Length: 147
View 1: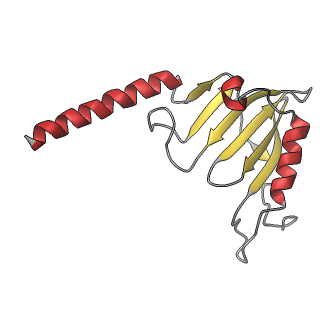
View 2: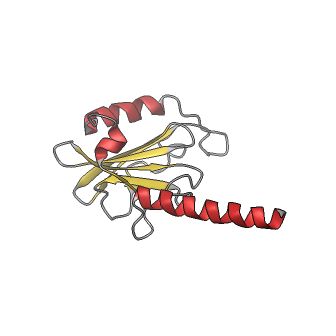
View 3: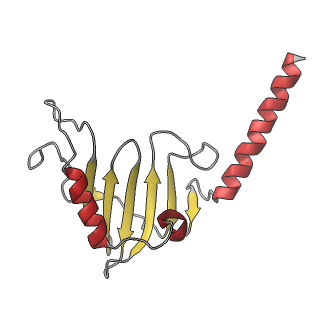
């Protein structure tokens, strides 16, 4: 009887996981969250507003004696013709992409657990996310030039 109940539970979890992944729009291994409206919950901030938030977050960062970052982190960089701002206020991180006019075109929400698309992804993408390596202008906030 217990084995039968476990099979039903496992099947139910598999079905729920598949339905959640389909609702998320997982494509090519990338968890898609849909449009920017889903990410921004209204109007999206501009590059200048994101940069101000990133700079404010840096005021709360704390570097340990061994050079590792203890808390909040932010970085800024370029990706093709786009600029991006990444903030990590806690265990989640948010990378936002902006066009040349400063308008947000896409975003990535990351976390420390595979919480997205039926527990299949650590990240979820919204809008247009350029396909390139993210190289921060200052990749070592706790190293030379950092805190």
